[in-house]
Image 1 (tube, one colour):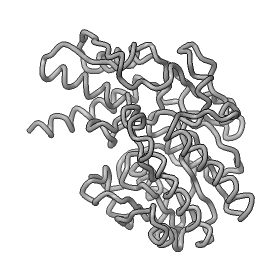
Image 2 (image 1 turned 120 degrees about the vertical axis):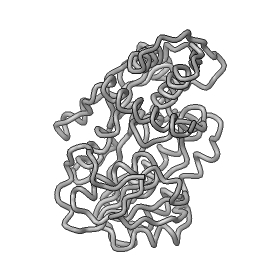
Image 3 (image 1 turned 90 degrees about the vertical axis):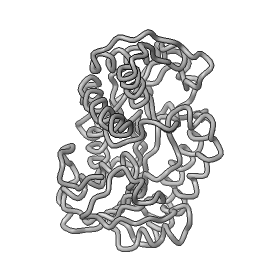
Length: 340
């Protein structure tokens, strides 16, 4: 667990001047990094998560750290009291193995999103940020690894990923109608595969970059010489480093962009290429065993960044090789500490 004084992405949110920002899901991966940056920017931060404090990825002493279940309306109302901005990141989610096998649990996150919107409206919050996902996109457009990058309008006609994707898309619509009907200034980012240090790297909820790093590290330290890859390895994805995610979030929230917008890297790689990057970082080369019946998600997904370049004059830019090196180093430290 860390304090808020460490390095992070340069902020675009300006001086908080002591105003209160609520980070729902503040004990999670993205929430921990976002809370740290908001504190650096001069915001008072209330980080809220239902996990016990000992299980938070980062705990910032300068923040008000509150353990509460935001799927409950009273807890959501209490969390939003006095806030100028709310960042709604709290959700039950994880990597492909988790979301394909826990569809009902993922959809229950709609309770948290509904109650946080209600709490923010009642508290007179100025801005409400919602973290959606690229899983909202029509699956018909993601059947080939040689795909056309996904534009924001490709979410409709709706055919999102079952369970998690439908919940995200429905919650996007709630944000829209709370803005249209009640005047709550909502902003929605469709995150594309966020990765980096201080996140889940084992246990079943980890995403591909962390899972690949862990597998390479484990093979290296145990000397197995092999790695298991889910699917054929030819699935294509883009992966966004956490610093870019935080910066994009803090640029979007005060902006005038009211439509959901992609916040993701457009550096497209196959899963096999992702494994090669992790192997290069670790200085090993492993035999690849392909588990073809494992959850693998869509065959191809990438972010079209034309809208974010046009609206914010920026797009995620941390190279995958650079971000993976930082992620690998952090996971290796965690892995070795867990073995001792």
